[in-house]
Amino acid sequence: MHFKDALPMATHPTSPCSTPPADVEWRLTRHPRNVGRARRLLRDQAGRWLLADDVTETAVLLVSELVTNACRHTRVPADRYTAVRCLLRGGSIRVEVSDADPELPRQRLASTDDECGRGLALVEALAKDWGAHPRPSGIGKTVWFELACP
Image (cartoon, rainbow, N blue to C red; front, side, top):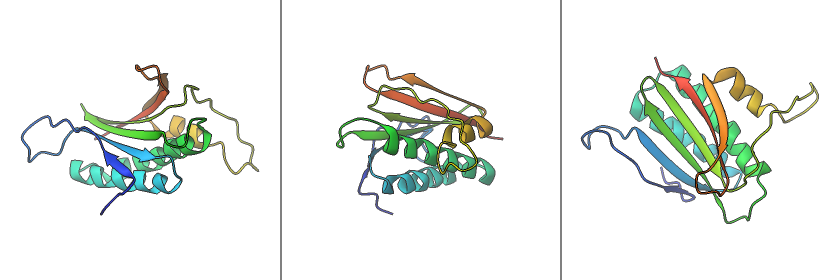
């Protein structure tokens, strides 16, 4: 599968080359079609890591929400990328979505008629932990979640 707009970034193997890396990152253009690409990339990586189906499906749903937020709500030039990083560590998977907008996300209270505004509520409900922080470079932010991997 070729992902024209998904630029692979550094991977950091933790053991011999035959073992899948425990830290992968992709850069995606800020286009709505890349929400689906982020889901596919994460699902493929979860398969290489042999994650349980329920953990994979939850991670895919939550990365979809965070990448959608990065595409829809960031106020940055169109040529800026969104980075998706996945780390497998000590019985959990951590997924980070970074963008160039410094404004940290705020949970909204969506009414029953609202068609959007539930993404962070889903993250709150399904993740073991989650949060957001400014990026160390001083440009933008990172929103992350963790899921337990039995």
